[in-house]
Length: 256
View 1 (cartoon, rainbow, N blue to C red):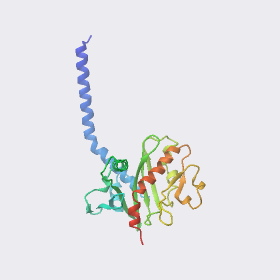
View 2: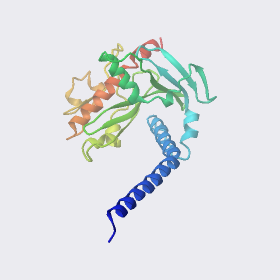
View 3: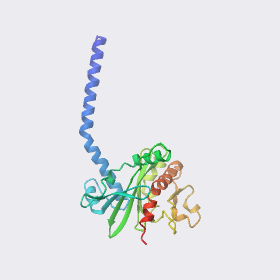
């Protein structure tokens, strides 16, 4: 029979060895994990403008079609511009692609609550594809069980939706998780985030369907997910809250 001292020593050594192995594995795998996260982010950005990429060609297609990355304040000031072709800064030194939306939205929330002073900046991606210009805005919000996110691309009028992507961490399969499906996302192209006078409207995810809205408002609405009311409301809030940060910039850059 083993003594208590032996059992304790054996368990301690085993814990140390396992911890060392896990730490080593995490260190070795971290660059691969970060690369995978970067690639998935690129693929989602491109997907919002209907460019299909895979892990092998995502970086190449990104550098081909995304011509600029801009970092913009909620007041509409452009604080940094990164040219992807030349891999150089035209202005500033913040790489917009590396901006963490969760962190920036937290800064914004802190300012609104009076508990913070650091100004947030948000990324905007400029895409040239098929001789057309599109503007891609990243999104982040809250669903029923966790964070939701995505990208929305606008045509060069800055108001008409060209495409969207949505993702989630833990929404319910068959219900809230439907935001990640083509069926839900296909409703967005052609919708507008401004009215004809360029008053900001966002796009509302409507319980009961966009057809229940007044006829002049239906261009700003899509059908909610049946049984996914809270997630649908989360998508509506995410769109409104994130897009509103770009309104001053958009209004300052409208084609006259």
